[in-house]
Amino acid sequence: MFFDGMMNNAIGVFLSKYIEAQFKISSDQAALFSGLIIVMGAAVGLLSGGLLIKIYNWNNRKLIIRTAIISAIGIFTLFFLFFRCSDNPINGVSLDQNNIKFDTTQAIPCNCNILEYYPVCVDERKSYYSPCSIGCRSQNKQDDGSYIFSNCSTDYVSTPEVIVKQGRCSIGCKIIVIFMITGFISLVTEFLMYIPQITYTMRVLDDETRLCGLSIQQIFVRISYMLGPLYQGRLFDWSCTIFAPTLNCSKTSNCIDYDLKNLSLSIAIPAIAQKFLATLCLLLAVYFSEREHRTRADEMEVNPQA
Image (cartoon, rainbow, N blue to C red; front, side, top):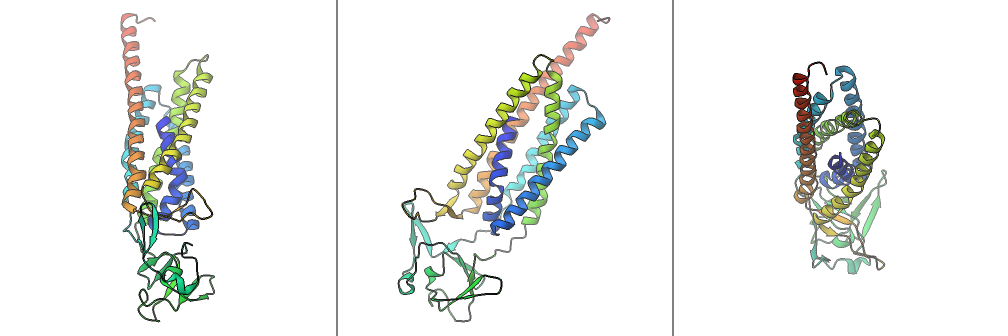
């Protein structure tokens, strides 16, 4: 449960950010989608795990074997994290020795702060850092609250008919539907094991050690909950290509653009590795359970009246 807890909390904390960055959707939509996957997947998995134990009433040996099988299947369901869209980079800006560098001087005649991140989409094709970075001098508020910009530099906007609108260009990535479905299946598989593992722990411990054993188990699970987001945050920073400029002497800044391939690898590889280790621990439990089963069988043969 230690490795499962680490993986679950890392994915749970960063899934919304991952969906937002990978599929270029708003933070509100990303939070909704990630919430649906996590809450529905956890609810279905936990309920199904409890029902399986109630219906089949497996003994300890069968219970741990089936839990290990489900965990092994869960390794393959995590491959949904490799699904990704094509990159849609921010144009006109690059990273030079950890400092942001703009490939324009258009902000001078516009009298605006070029460091302020406010992405715009030009002609539904190219995304830019801000209207300031491409020399837009006019803006018009639309009925939906968004802005359309005009009088932009001809270096970036060839004709006045070209539309420059607020927000990054949509990449039209339809794979998000497959991502949602497979992600839901993966989380159902993951939480399907939770109740069986707790049940197995309670069964194998005697009355004197049961409460202490469960407490120690949950302590390690809580420690894993802390470790997961720590390493995942570092890996997300590793996949960042452009950090927002630091303002007002701030020492930290947010990432505004990711390498989508590295972003996918940064969440998929650790998750699969931890799931493999969790499965390995369950297989060890299966081994010791089988050994205990054989020992009891041998004792029954030697002393059948025992």
